[in-house]
Image (cartoon, rainbow, N blue to C red; front, side, top):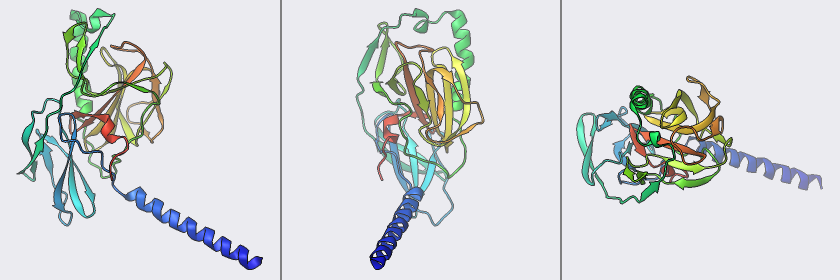
Length: 280
């Protein structure tokens, strides 16, 4: 009986060691987002063996994220929604490397906004908007040079996806810019959580976006959370995955309580869905 017990204990400890090894391996493995070479998508471009210094890559004059996997360098390139289908290129240490972008037809969404000033702002509103735009743009193009990045996110809120990325928006029968994020509907007060480790680079209350939080995840990967009723973080604060950023609300231009979630990669707004459950 004692021998049997000892054998079971040894087997249990061996199992724990194997699980620990698997956990450690997966912890340091690089998980890529899903590749989608379309406007608003992501291109994963192999750059060659990682036995040289980390290359410097730009696309549309913006620095591009570089990461290493299986002893190879890879560029993780965000493709703006305005990109035309066809041949495009990045600069790798000032030398061109090409890739192709396919066409994608996004659906059109018609919305009725009761507050007409949120569709056609008056002069005072425009003065405020023009002051806010540079702050938002600067936050979304923020660059932090680090190799400590996570490219697989958890959903920031538990709710129904009420509006997909890339939709052609028509407000009160007036065409506007395509939808540059994902809308998740949930009751007011629902917690909004960090989808990955990051650092708060900006918070504010904006005319269209309402109360918002901007998170830096490294190497040009920035996420934005809009229409919050309450903000629970401050600029400069580091947050861990699952940490509360704020609560669902109806601030800014909205038709109901929801989170507008934007993902910006090398200053290009890309589909957040590509970061949810990435490919290995």
